[in-house]
Each structure stands twice: as C-alpha cells, then as structure tokens.
Image 1: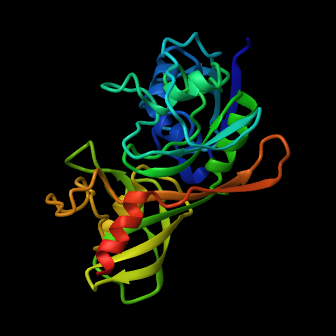
Image 2 (image 1 turned 30 degrees about the vertical axis):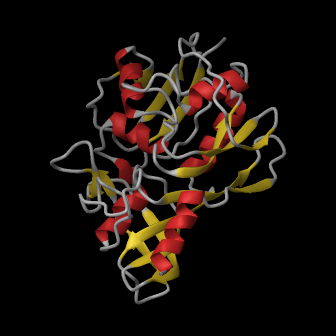
Length: 306
C-alpha cells in the first residue's frame, strides 16, 4: 500500500507558526504528537527538505506530508453494545453513551468506542489516524453523550475530514448550564488554546485557535440554570465547556471548568451532541442524524423545573 501524500502551501497570514502547529490547524484529523513523529521520521518536508518540529513556516513554503499506510492493529475488538443510528459501507453513526472513551489512550486500552467498532466492523475502518484511532475522524469527550460518525475506509475519512477542516459540518449540542440568561441567543467568538498554567486544561487564549460558538436559550430554569442549544462553527477541544464558562455559564457537572462541588452528583458535564449533519462521502448528499436526549438529561431538566 502506497503512502498518502498531502500538499500544503503556507499563506502570508500563517507566517511564523511552528510547523507542527500549522499542520495540526490545517489537518484536524492528525494529532500534533503524530505530526511530530512524522517530522522525526522524515515524512514531512518543507521545500523538499527535512525540518524540525519547531521550524517556523514562511509564506509560500511548500509542505509535503507523507502519511504511511496503516500498520496492523494491536488494539483488540470487543463485543461492546453500540447504539447504531445509521450504517453503510462507508460510515457508521453512533449514539455514544456517557462514560465511554472514544479511542484507546493511556489508562484506557479496552472498553472504548474503537474497541466496539473493531468488533462490529470486522476491522474495516479507516487507518489515517493511526493504530489507536482507526475510523475516528472526530471525537467527543468521555462524559459527553450523543452522535458521532466513524469512517470505514480512507476515502470516506478524507472526505469527512475535509468538511471538518472547513467547518461545513452541522453540529448542535444541548447543554444545561449554571445561571439564567437575559437574552434569547448569543455568540461566543474567542480563541481557545492550552491553559497558560494548567496544561491539561484549555482556556480562552489570544494565542489559541479561532473558536466560535452560537447558543440559543431553550429554557431558563428556576432563575438559577438554563437549558441551551449550542451550534459549533469550529470544533476545538472542550470548546462549548470553555466558551460557556468564559461568559459565566459553566456546564452542570463540569468539574474542570465549573464549580468544584457538584450538588447534583453528575457523572461529568451535562452535554449532549444531539445533531450531526454532513455530505455523505459516496453520494455527496447532505445527511443529518439526531440522537435523542439521554434519560439522565431529561430527568435533570424535570428536577430543575421544580
């Protein structure tokens, strides 16, 4: 199997950015750590020359990325029940349950969505994202529920990844947040990057990536909480959680960006990926999928209305 080759030309406005960050910003299906490995292995060239990960790109730099073919997986398929919304020969759409990690990582090498997909799809998953993330073109947090698409081949993966890169995918989330709103809707337009002190957290950071979240208030609850819908124009790590906390409306149950004490004893943030829409990689027709609100979410709404 031949390498996949990706060509990038640096625009003037991107001058001075580290090459690993530049590629990560422009190829959202590649992790920064994987990009750094490719650089070390000489699989990424700038103007036909090898560079280091801290190389600063310049206008008109020609970057060639050679993605090696996927290696044999050493992650095992597991017979894990999956709530399948839709499936065909190219994609599979899942309603992910709360507490399920999307792909294997340190401390979670079994029981993940990938383990379940490997079993269900009989290893027929895209290999672009490497050994630990076959089929995974985007992800949602462990304690976020809802709709997620995985790809069964590299062609489908590349097509969906491009839609993610240009932010043309429809993504709508339901969330329950602290504090009621005085307006019916709004937009948070604030860049997100690593927290300057706690590197395990994200934060509104002027040096971060562009991030835009539109929100609509569905219901104010008891003057203390609110049920909202968030529509993503971008897809940054923890975007909704960071953005809503930044305007004084952290998510209930969010022990990272919200109050340390959770009187509702939730298992993580009250956040549900309800709608996902995109162009199908084979038919090129727009398809939209919806995952109903989980029972815990509906029960919490009823409790907060009283």
